[in-house]
Amino acid sequence: MKLLRLWFRFGIESGSEIKESGLGLQFLDSARSTPKTLWFFVFVNSGVAKRWPLPIATHSSKIPGYATFRESKVINISDSLDEYLQQGLPHVIRFSLPTDNHGTQVYDDLVYGHHEHNPYTTEGDFILLKSDGYPTYHLANVIDDHLMNITHVLRGHEWQTSTSKHLLLYKAFNWQSPIYGHLPLLERERGRKLSKRDKENAINPIEIDYYRQKGYYPDAILNFITLCGGGGFTDEDTVIGKTLDEMISLFNINLFSRHAAIVDFKKLSLCQRAHFKRQYQKSDEGRRRIIEELHEKVLHYYPEKNSQTSIQLQKDYLEKILNMIDFRIILLDELFTNNLYEYLWKDPEIKKDFIDNIEQFKFVIQQTLKNLDKIRFTPDDVKKFIEEYQPNKITNKQIFRIWRLVLCGCLQGPPVHEIATFFGLDIVRKRFSNALLVLDQQNENVQVKL
Image (cartoon, rainbow, N blue to C red; front, side):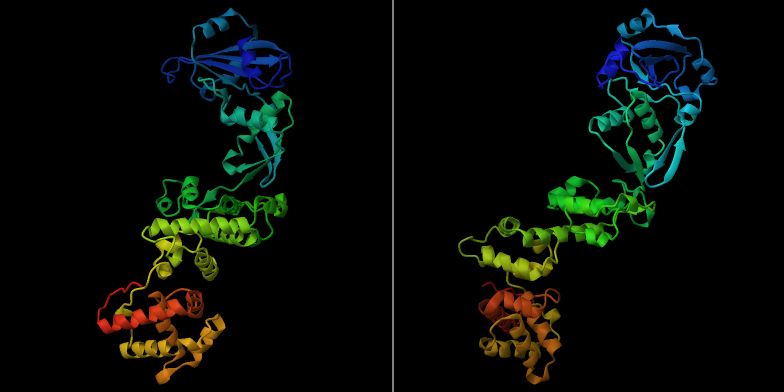
């Protein structure tokens, strides 16, 4: 029997009992859209196939009096079925649903509690095998889950009504069905549907390849997706930065929520930063790999730098950068694409637009150069020097601002004493000397290279 062989492809042995089940064979014309469709529904029980002839129609749920036809007299299978198959007519195979309350499936959803649904009343017999021979999701997921011994299925809420179909299939195969739980759908902020056609997708894409190419850690992506909604954890903040095994140990299946699951991309940044820091601090191999990657990015963004002579390509320098920024970034590329970190790779520009009082600015630079040898360049020592050294009654705030402009060329960044300690005496002296030279040249945007 050709129909039985179709079932054998999915693991049903010859003669096995398939309870309360049906196969529907639908022959289609070439247009596949006209009502000239001949229907056969075949029940299988202990290897014996029978069929019910049905009227010509396109969809069973739209046929008036469909149930009456379904109860028509059973006839033995004849050669006519083989004849249709031999003609090569396109056909699909459907599940023949019970027409009474036996089709109603009742189960306890892990998230939504009691649920019952009868697919016959809303959809009619559903397709198992398409005309191209490929199974639909309904058949494939049941076969796949059974073969993998799946015990729990957690999926989106939109699949809740389909679960009754899957339970009927499990009963037809005489298999133990898994426990089902349906989670709230993912939404963007303000309740918008998560869609790749959303205009926000240009800012926060939902395609996984985008984040893979950007260099996000797989554990960070998994961490983020786990926290996107549905619950499962007592305190989500404690889950940030955790690996899969660690998240499993914290997971509680009884803590699911029905509330809308908002995809907050701020959490992705938190997860990536946490895993970035973890990779660098928790393993020598992770630290070595990150430093090597940073070295390659310096050469990519500044190909003119020489590995033999450039301090920015030395391992110690790169390691000091990562320690100083204390993982305020989430990706290494930010050290090159964000102007706030430009001072790490080249001498800053001194812009007079940032200078409130040029005479005061020049005076602080001159006095700093005169007294630099008194600093041992530890964070506490630099900070103490700046706070205690107040020429001409200049405030600490003003001195810190001038030092930041000289060392970084910007008004934001890590604490000034950390930057000065990071560079050390020689680079600090050179940058202060350059700043003094720029002021003397009276050019607004002159950059002097070391």
